[in-house]
Amino acid sequence: MPKLMENKKNLDYYLALPYTFQVRQVKDDDKSYYWANVKELDGCHTSGETREQAFNELQEVLKDHIEIKLEYGDPIPEPQEDFSGKILVRVPKSLHRQLIFKAEEEGISLNQYMLYKLSK
Image (cartoon, rainbow, N blue to C red):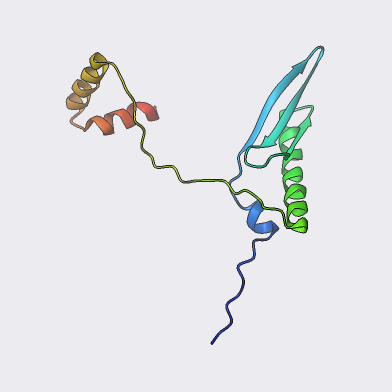
């Protein structure tokens, strides 16, 4: 019976995941800087004088953060990509009627019409 290889998640595995990088400008008194973090990883953040500097620094911080977690055997959250694609929206009856009429004019379903309008 062949021995099964253990599926080990390493640094390269985690760095290839689609983590969410957030960069925002912070203004304190007379100075301004950019603060960057990885949404899914508490404590994984940095700052920089420019947006680009903060973003680039965050890439290094992410690598260091994951290396430390792996070294100590700490759990590493992974980005979640389980979106259903379904949205339930309540709208006024008058808007619902307008959307249905517009969809009929285009010869498409209400869902297709709303997707078209949302994607513009």
